[in-house]
Length: 181
Image (tube, rainbow, N blue to C red; front, side, top):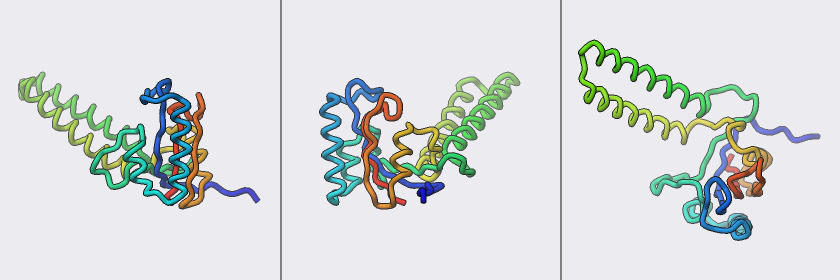
């Protein structure tokens, strides 16, 4: 019997890139492959995964993030609000606010400098909402590189695997992935 993939998963990952990837990390492809193998062994041996992410991931990590490298993913064909949809909604709100401010300028109700300051504050507020949504909402599997989802959805909770570098399915490098749930 073929195993059914879950609708949603939560994973944590370490991205190990090299000079020739879009991330352009400061290591060779061979060094990246070796480091990914070492990190996989350390993770499977019980090393604290969050520490591995903080110390080795080439993805941006916020110092105060309690769950660095964590992504919630929603599988193909599963309905529900996802991060991509939330970003679209936030972009719509920004466009609406910009239009309101333009009308206020054209109507003489608001100075250009004041409108720019209000828009900047509004954009900062939306960025905060996007950061919060990034932590809470799942990303559509289709929005990620294929190997990321292929490995993540194949793992059982608690299992650790690696998505190897590939020009098309994993162009950013190696992803050492731990499935949380």
